Structure formats: C-alpha cells, structure tokens
Length: 490
Image (cartoon, rainbow, N blue to C red; front, side, top):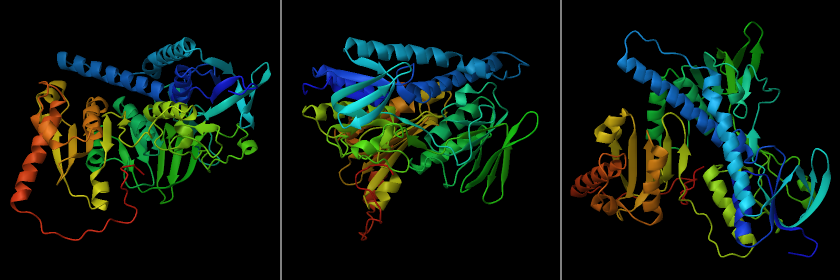
C-alpha cells in the first residue's frame, strides 16, 4: 500500500461479493473497508432480493401446509386465506438478524464500514458523500459491488398500490386476488409460484416461448404442469405493448400485448430484467463504460480494464447468483493481492426457489445435442421412491446425463422438494470427474431423496445396456452454430 493510501481495499457496496472480498482481504492481512449508503448492511441480496424472497417463500409454504393438515384432520373446514402482514411478518426480522450477522463478521475481521454514497475521483480515490459530511478516501484497490435493481418499462413507475417490481413487491399491503407477472425469468417464476400457492390467480406474460429457457426442457414442462394445477395462466410469445392503471375503486392494472390481448388484474408485478447500479459512480472519470444495462466487463479474475479496479456480483451480469457473487469476491481479493488462485470455472449450481424448487448443474440435453455429444439419461421420479411418497411430493424428478462412451456425469437436473440441496451431490461428482459407476457402486441412506441418484443411475445403466445390443450407425454430426462447449448457460 502506498504511503498516501488509507486502505489496501475499498469495496463499494455491501452485498455478497463485497463482503467476501473485504473479509478475504482482511484474512490476507490487508486493511479493508466497505462503503454502504443504506442503513442495513447486506446489499440488495438482503434488502430486496434473496433473503426476503426466500423468507416469504417459507412463510407461504408453512401457511399452506398448516391449512392442508387441518383439512386432513377436520371436516367442513374452509381454507383460510392468508394476509400479507402474516406472510411478511418474519421477513423484516430475518433481514435485521442477517444484517447484524454481516456487521459482526466485518467487525471480527477489522473491516471498516464507511456510510455514504461513493464516486470515483481517480482509480485510487473515492469521494464518499454521507448525510452530514463528505470525505475523500484513497485505496490501493477498489471493488465495485453495487448490485442491481429491477428494470421498468419506459414511462412506467411503481406506485406501491397497483404496480410493483421485484424490489418492492413485499411492501404490498394486501394479498391481491389476481396478479399479472411480466417476465418469466427466475425472479418472475419464483414470485408467481409463491403467490399462486397463497391462492392468488396469476397470469405470466413473456415474449419467450417458455419460462426459464436455460433450464432443461423436461423440468420446465413439469414446472408449468404444477403451476397450472395452481391455476397459473401462461401467456408466452406475447410482447407487452402498454402497462397502465385503470381508474376505479379499487384501482386495477391493465397489460395489453402487441397481439391485442388485454389482461386485467389487481396488481402487476414487473420482473423484466435488472440493471447495474453504476450511474452514481462517475465511472467516466476512470474511463470505465458500463453497457446499456449498467453492467461492467471483467476478466476471469474480475478485474476491469482499469488495473486497480475490480467488479463482482450482479453488476457484472450473468449468472447473478448470491452463491457465485460470494466466490467472485473471494477470487478478486486473492488475485489483486497476488494470492495463487484459479478461475471459478463453470461447475456451480443454479437454484430456483419456486414452488416447486428447481436446481441444476452442468449441461442440458439441448446443449449436448447442439454440440453433438453422445449421451444417455437416467431419470428417477419422486413418486417411485419411499421418501417422495412419505413427503407427499410425487411430482419431483431427478435427471442425470452421462457421456455415452466415458460414462462421466455431464449434468444433473432436479425439480421438487429439497432440489437445491440434493443437487450438491451431483455437483461434487461432476467437479471430481466421476460418473455412472460411482452411483452404481454407492449406497445411499434409505429412505432419502438422495436415493434418487441410485435409481436414476440404474435407469441410465439399463438404457445403455439396451442401446449397446443394437448400436446406432455412425452418422456425421456437425455442432450447430452457437453451440457452447464451455457448459455455460446463455
């Protein structure tokens, strides 16, 4: 650290990437600080994203589960409709507890917290404007971890009554009877399923042909089947033309598609992508230019084109997961201070906390087909294993994809109870280069969901035995244009 620098590292923001980066730097004996403009530490992950939405999900599941139990053991009981105060009662408590935990972690590692809004003066100097003061701080390195916010259509604003974004939907005062969700990505699907489970009539609208287009098609088919059972209506291949609030008492929202369909509902939830919070950083002073959605370009070690400036988390775009953001921050700190480190790679899992859960790691069938990779699948359905029957989930499934020749695991895909936990077994085997033989030779606890791996492996083994009797004729196969060989998702 130069004599004029106060810190070895200053992180702008206090989300997962910034927290892990600052703590890793402290573990390396460096002096680190975090700049945060909000009262609660934790970034959008804690205030508007992962923590509140997953806490809300558990509240919905608990309330609906209790209703089911009462109906099983009683007669003539009507399902009680939950209220928003009931569902969000625990959200604020969890947020505050988690923020306190973050503060404790930073304090234990002597990471300073500088309240205020940061902007660049030069690559090593920041101006921090707090409510009652302005200070200038110098650092040998800076990490930009400012997160992202929901994108709104031009001319549309969230009024907190009829139109909401994923950033403020849990501020809703009353549980609506109907909702239109604009956007069938991860956040849109998660909230659509939660509100549908709570008894809201949900309509999903998106210009794509199916939700979660990067997920294995068989899983999205099952997801749509289960959501339709909750009376969710899908309007795919529909581009929104106008969004407006209709006068009346109560006020209602209207979405009109370019094909002429009008969808009227109590509330509209806009979940049509996110943009990085980079506009207040004065990036032009250090010759950094974000793209049209506020995202910054970085290399494999999360270093920008300015050598002393790094960026990680939502502000660099894909994959935009809290789990990957934590790891990005750690790797960035190691790289900037010369600690030996390897790039993150692509064997990280995706977790989608819809009802039901979806999780995956590795390649999909669609990717492998485009790449002309020979493969075989093995499937296990929850309805076929004891644990699935015990839990009452007969709609879940685990799909494993193996290389036909080497028998190595190429991908694992799961939908259903504990999918986001179950996927880690597949992740470990994939990362360590294991395959079909491992699952065939391994004993899993019974009854557990993990037993699905054994059943799916046996299913794949039987498929391979049958196909080896009558091998397919060798046919030339050219990878399709745009086929990925890195196992990254688009």
